[in-house]
Amino acid sequence: LRYRGNLNGQIEESFTGHEIIRAFNQEEESMRIFEEENEKWYEQEWKSKFFSSLSGPLVHFISNLQYVIISVLGAVLVLQRAISVGDILAFIQYSKNFTTPIEQITRIMNMIQTAMAASERIFEFLEIDVEENPSQEQIKEMTDEISFENVNFGYSEDELVIKDLSFKVKKGEKIAIVGETGAGKTTIVKLLMRFYDLNGGEIKIDGVNINSYDKHSVRSLVGMVLQDTWLFNDTIYNNIRYGKLDATEEEVINASKEALADHFIRQIPEGYESELNEDADNISHGQKQLLTIARTILSNKQILILDEATSSVDTRTEKLIQEAMDELMKDRTSFIIAHRLSTVRNADKIIVIDDGHIIEQGSHEELLEQKGYYYNTLNTQKGGV
Image 1 (cartoon, rainbow, N blue to C red):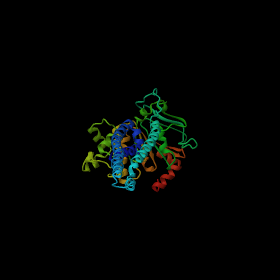
Image 2: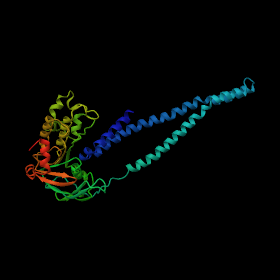
Image 3: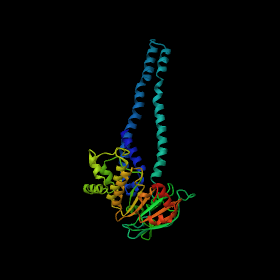
Image 4: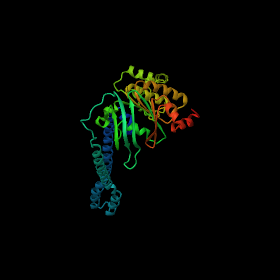
């Protein structure tokens, strides 16, 4: 049960944190851990099932040898007129459990056949090759701009989530994407990460369609800090180091200091070696967010995606996280997804999305002058401009 629990926990972590795993190009590491845990579980489960399936029938068979013994001895005693045939039948009646092991073996064989049929389908699915183009280019750095050109996308063919979207982001710019829940803000950056293929249009980095690049090399440029903080059931040190697996201890600590996380980490009794539980709820939400920022700083990405990173925290914690993010965004091309407009005032450009369309764009001051959605929403959230 312990090995099965470890395996299930690893699978759950991989599914719930799949976006972080893909963003940091750690699929191979995640698969390695899965295969390691799966092999441990397989070995233990095989031994357990073997002995449990063998011991039951064996015990029943041995105990029911009395049926044979009764028959032989009974026949001898009948010939000697010591007992009657009825006595033998009575003994035999009590010994009819002899057939139970055979029934058990039959049931086990049926279960094995069912499992084999299911496993064939499962392994057939697992052996499907991921569609990759070996001739795709590798991109090592962004030198000019990212452009979305007439982008269309839908999770189903019948309903588009992003509709004819076009904008450009220069290297080093901070661009905020704002709008109501469900407007398509997060989908835009997922498309940049090549989590999905477009229905139409193009996304380009330095004038080259990202579909021409290997998807892992595209993701190697991007760091993510998400609303749903995702951390491993592991030490704080290893969670930060996930951004760069070969990082030194000094690099991990420096990243924590830049993210303003070092102070609270050292206040915990075991410091960097403190173990986070399964949901990392032994630290606060704000502390989780600072750890994810430290992890992203350590990864040293050129492009940043900050998705509602300051939501669900109090004002004091929000200020601390904002300071850490300001440090993180220095000299980096940043996409800031936000619902709370007070967090995007300093963006170079703000794009307002509604139903997959751009309805307004410009700086904070320019959007205030337009007195449209941005102006009205900011008034509602802050009680005035």
